[in-house]
Every structure is written in structure tokens, then in C-alpha cells.
Figure 1 (cartoon, rainbow, N blue to C red):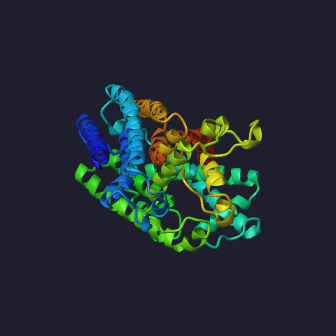
Figure 2 (cartoon, rainbow, N blue to C red):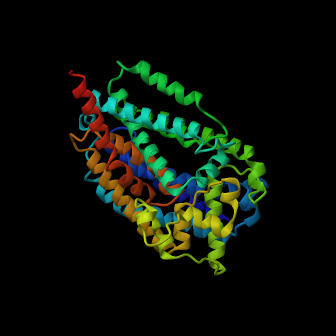
Figure 3 (cartoon, helix red, strand yellow):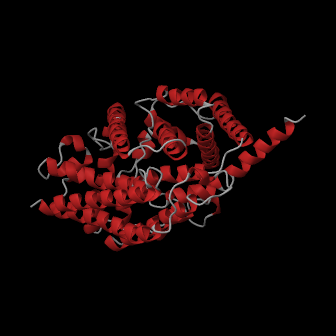
Length: 437
């Protein structure tokens, strides 16, 4: 009865690792910096771990699987969602593999050197961002959060304009951080003391009750930058490190869920779950069941709102609402406002509420085209000093494109990256000019 599900899972893993091997042979090293391979690997985990757990439990979910335990999807539903996953990868590979033939082999010389003035400009932006956060917290405009979940309530309580400003400032600080990471590694081993100090600060800032992105993002950036600029990391170490990172990621998620269990459970999310892999799969199951029973009602502005995500709400003729918020408002009303609990949506869920397999193929093809063009661009020599930090930003954005919505990171690129490099250059040039006097 479960043979089709098992075959679907095995086929996905075989295809993804075949692509990994093909790209590795072409590059002559592990494709750690290849955005297309990253997308395939991350998508593979999110689309196969939950059904694999379902198989291992005999075609059912235990109470630890949280919402999935209540839903108990049928074999046909699991097969359909895995079919959506196959459609995404089919669309992706049909374009990506063609463009891959035009991508140059990796070369350190292709990545431009980030000057000292740019480092200074980036450091100033990080300092200003930290000072703004400190002043806001001391001013009383933002009340202190009691927990990680409560931090979302705090953000929800803020005026829209202030939330937008904080997001932009945080985005600029994130860009500046990537610039500094790349610049420090380019100066290895001269600045290795500063590099290790920053690495230790990340490790000691780990908070089981907090978000994982602030820890994982800089660590992954360091790994990829080291791989590209210093020394390639062998595939065996890549997979071993990836496995350890996945385990830590899941453990931190479980600990955070345990800490917030009491608040979230009141509104119907009983169970601690085993991480957001189950959460995204549960979204897709619930939406599929709702669609099959005719309960899905969503307008086009919300379905494709990610395309205009870079535009401020004040400039739009409709109320901008993310698919995450639409889902919570319609299926778990009061959850976000009451507990601050946010909820990812998922690329598979996007296809479920839309055109199904056909939409998955189209979305996968567009992502494959973008990944292919990015790799072709990033491997060619260039004088654009901000290019490799942008590459890291887009690579990290792969997670958002699978966890939230497929094109969400590109709106953020328009919002942040059209201005951040210019601002860093302007501040850096000003510091350099004034240092002459």
C-alpha cells in the first residue's frame, strides 16, 4: 500500500544526488556555493522527511507530530503532495540543467576584493543599527518581550511605519554583516583574530528560546565564503557538517516548541512537533483537505502578493497580506494576535491552493532559470565589490523561498540591495576622505 510513497521518496533523493554529483564533477569540487544545488537539497529535506517519518510509523503520525496527528493524511494525500514535489523539481531541472552548461568553473579571481573603506562603511551601518535598536528599547516605544513568541506580539503592536523602518534598518545591517564576513575572510589569515571573535560571539549568543536564523545565517555564510575564497571543503565534510547542522537545527526547534508549548497549545497547536518540517507538511495537508472540501477562498492579490512585496503597503490599492497571515487568519484566528506565534507557509502549499501540479512545474521552472542565471553571473569576473555578498544573501534566501513563498526573497532584494551597497560605499568614501585631513 505504501510502495508508491516509498518509490516517490527514493526517486527524489536519487535525482537530487545525481544532480549534486554532476555539478561537483563539472566544478571539480563540492558545489557548496551553487544556489541551484542548495535549492534542491533544502527542498528535498522539506518535502521528504515528513512523509518518510509517516512511513516509518506505519502510515500514521504520533502525538509528537502535533497537527499531523489530528489530520492523519491518507495515502492518496501523501502521494499527491509528493507528486507536487516531483513537479517542482521537474520544472526546476528542465531549465537549470540547460543553463548549467553555460556556467563557468569556479575561480577565486572572479570575486572582487572588498576595500577597507567598504569595511568601514559596513561597520558604521551595523553600529548605527545597534544604536537605533538600543534607543528604541530605552525610549519605551517598544516594550520588552517576555519570550520569543512574545517578540512577535511586540512587533505586531507597533505602528506599521515603524515596523517597516525597523525592517529596512535590519536589512541594511544584514547586508553590512555579509560584507564584513566576506572582507574578513578575504584578508585571511591577517584578520583571523577578528574572525574567530565574531564566530565565538555567534556561538555564545545561542538561545534555545530564540530564533535560529540569526545563528545559522552567519555560520553558513562563513562556510560558503571559506569554501569559495580560501579552500574548497570536501563533499564528505559537507555532508557530515550538514547532518550535524540539521540535528542542531531540529533540537533548537524542539526546545523552542517545548518552551512555548503552554501558550500555543491553548489555541489548538497541541504537541511539541519535531520541527518546522512537520509544520510545513501539515500546512500542505490541511490546505489540500480544505481545498478538496471546497473551503479555500483566496483572492489574487493575496495569492500573488509576493510579487509586489517590495512595495510599501501605503502605496498599494489593496490590503497587502502575506500567505502566512492569510493562513493563520482563516484557519487559526486569534493565534498570531494572542500568542505572537508566527507560522511559515511553504512552497508546496502555494501549489496546493493554486494550480496544483501545473503551477508547481511553472514555479520550479522560474526558480531554476533564476538560479542558473545567477550562477552564470557570479562565476564571471566582475568589478562589482558587492556581488559575492549578494550571492550569499540569495543563497541564504533559498530557505525563505521554500519555507515561506517561492519568490519572497526577490522583493527583499529590491527593498534592500538597491540601496545598501550605495550607502556602504558613500559612508566608506566619506570616512576615507576625512581620514586624509
